[in-house]
Image (cartoon, rainbow, N blue to C red):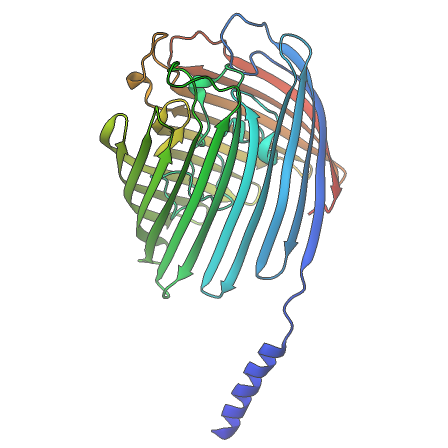
Amino acid sequence: MRRARFLGLAGVAAALATPAAADETRASADVSAGAGWSNNPFAGQGGQSSGSGFAQLGVSPSIRILNERRVVTLGGDVFHQEYFNDFGGNTTYDGYADYSERVSDFASVHARAGYSSARLGTFGFGGLGGAIGGSLNPVVTIPTDPVTGVGAGVGLVNPGVVSPVLPGAEVGAFGAGQRQRTLNLSADFSAQLSTLTSLTGSGFYLNSKFGGRRNAVADPLAVSDYDGFGTSIGLQRRISEQTNLGVLGSVAKYNYGAFRGTSRIYSIQGTASTRLSPFWTLDGALGVSFIDEQRTGSSTTLSGNASLCRRERRGNVCFQAARSVLPTGFAGTQVQTSVGVSGSRQLGEFDAVSLSASYVDLGGGDRLDTALGPLDDSYALANATYSRSIGRRLRINPSIYYRKVSGGNIDRDDDYGGQVSLSYRLGDIR
């Protein structure tokens, strides 16, 4: 007994004496240049242009500091397009700091701070986040990284399922030439309470400001600065080797200024995730959101999301749908319903192709009629990208796209185009 106790104490002492794993730093930057053509790159009113060619430059630096338990990432994008006729130059940029840590074998934490600046209605072939369309033209994407707290009614227990249009997609204000600057702070945690039960929680703060704003009191078509904050808590229990069930509650408040007032959203949802086969998974949340708006009164709406995904070694595909209550500066709080599909396929050692399409009904247009008629309230986007690696650092990326803004009385030409770009990785290639 004494020997066993001695060995146990010695093991604990040895573990405490073992030095923590050394941090590893990985620094890199993607530099890109390209050219292309776009029919209506800022989603302006019809008849203003017959399209234009453009040249583009971009840089996306990133620094990752990581060890066995912790990852800290600092990064951003600066992206510029110069049009040959009818349109002026356009620069989009963002920056972020991301922190995640497994604080124990049973708990992990995550926090993120981000800032972005973009002209409303812009289409970008690279832009924010280094993805086609970026945050300016968000599409349904295959879930990868946790996303937290951008509205009440989003299934945060299954954080990879997100609405394809993010807060700040001010579709009704496309073509106005205004610039939107957004600050987003979020934090979340997950804890394993037992072998079968887990707890998750999140909180966020969002601040959105617009350049070139008009007076919202005198002009109902003007956009308004807004901010918001909220939190969520969820409980999930494993009922079999393949299936988890849970419940999620969330609350959020958004302030739109004196003219549009404030909104509060309270949501309760049931959540589920299951593995249907070695390749297919199904995740979702379904419930109800209660909306209390100072300007228009109270209402109730269905909210939730669903994601059906197939993942295999050479490719993946996801079908997604979401209905959530999200803020906009143009029309206050809106119920956004979206559906989409996305997929990618590795064609060979050096070649890959990705396709995506999504449709979003932004809601609110029927209750926001103005002298110019109902506001635009729907957005559709489809794009296709081919990527070929040339060596370990150089990549060529041709892509094409089509998008349409509709639902209002303003006549807008559909936007479509394509581009070819080259990108080169500096620094770490992982």
